[in-house]
Length: 242
Ligand code: CA
Image (cartoon, rainbow, N blue to C red):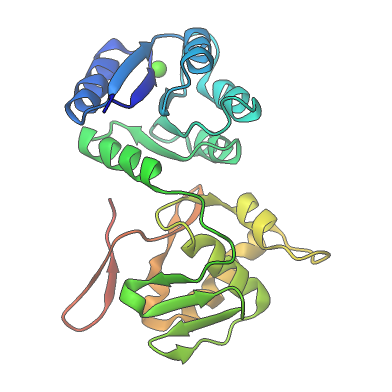
């Protein structure tokens, strides 16, 4: 089987080499671009399986590349993992809203980056009508009936809380910005501000009781449903940070 091609767009050569080394060790075929324009050209010409995209580039910045790739029909389906400088939450928010699939913050551990890349490649868009079953069946969300069952008991949620939970839980580990959440959970004519999302999250966490911690706050960015969970001996759920 041919190695899956990955394009790494990164102008800092040492970082690019490090990423390449780890990707190749995992069996990927790596192409590198050291500028934004080169990255855009190669992504369009080669249609890689995934793009690792630095935001700070000497010419066209990564956000612009992300926007262009996600808007072009030929490249829209290529997953993008962004690499951002620490403290650039605004860039992360913009990147996610432009369609980036995940991100790591510099300095990152290669192990974390590889895990993110493999996760992104593994995840598929979840069927909006499929039942979402999590935590070994303890939490089940049934979109056909709009019900949430927790350890066999139905959890009474408002429609907004239900939609919020379903949206986040459908793709564990994916960070969603407040604006993305608003767009996904807002009903036909309901008025919902991005700040109101915080209130709905708080209420939802309370209703999920000991499982409330599964809805993680990603500071400065938004929320995500934890993708790793280990029951403690006393049955307290402990979401682990990757
Ligand atoms: Ca850079």
